[in-house]
Figure (cartoon, helix red, strand yellow):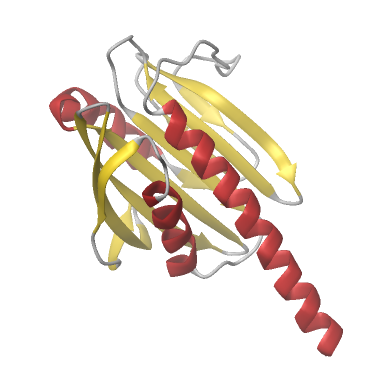
Length: 191
């Protein structure tokens, strides 16, 4: 029992370190134009991975896809195309049940400590839903390079997996990002 507890704590610590690493990477991509694109070979608006699937408008693209980085962890980022576009959705999935508020708090801590973000503010975690899945979420806002941004962090579980999804963009782009955010959320399914 003692070794099982230590093993579980080490596993959770490793998962937290990986999550922090990928949150940092996703935060940085939200503030600059991505020069690489990894678009699904089947179609430019359908994304299907081992533990989730969704659709996005043709003017959004997968910019980072780190499948099976660690044992049972997958990270994917989708951005709205265009030099001055700011829409970003990041999806992290874990082949394990992780405490939802812990995932949200780790994301909040990482966003808060990002030196590119000024005046970061997160609201309390509340019950919510992402598509039809019962979830926990927190909204946040910050300024990056003088541009105000806002977003929402969602966390939910499905059978033996846990998901963390961040939707964020510049306040001035809210209307142009909305279609992409809605399409991704409304089509998102777990496996």
